[in-house]
Structure formats: C-alpha cells, structure tokens
Length: 94
View 1 (spheres, helix red, strand yellow):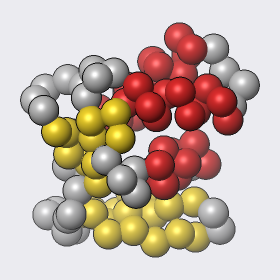
View 2 (view 1 turned 180 degrees about the vertical axis):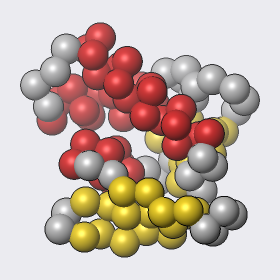
View 3 (view 1 turned 135 degrees about the vertical axis):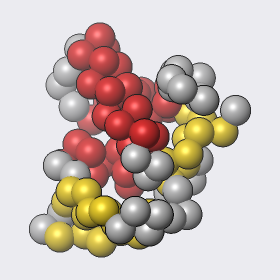
View 4 (view 1 turned 45 degrees about the vertical axis):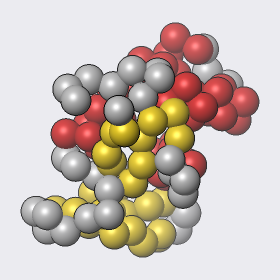
C-alpha cells in the first residue's frame, strides 16, 4: 500500500518500541535501529493507536481535541502518518 486514505485502518508496528519522556513519545524501530521523537500531537496520535483505528477515527478525535480546521488537520495528519508508514513504524490493514 503506497498511500493512506481516511478509510485505511492503521496500527502500531510490532517492530516499534516506545518510551515516554516528559509526555512525548520516543520510538525505536527494531528493523533499522533508528530512533524517532514525536511532538505533542504526534504523541497523541501514537497513543490513539493502542488498538487499530481508521484514519477517519483519528481525524475525528483530533478535531475534538484541537482547535484546527478539518482541512489542516487532515493534510498534516496524513503527511505524518505516511511518514510513519514509510519508516515502518505503523502498518496499514487493507
């Protein structure tokens, strides 16, 4: 799967281990031993993925929590999630 859509269900990769430091999530990808640090909103999205979730559900929860337009929320969230997918930190279920 190359690109995510709002209908895509995503989940954390089993090869991503996480730790929380001062409320922000830090991840390590066991496939490539790279570390990634997430800001507040990235950490919020990561915590939403305790169970597999559709991107639509994630967007709805973000719009409830943050004062942001739906267009900006979707654009920024899709960009972020595609980056996580490219780095194999999340996996998409068809």
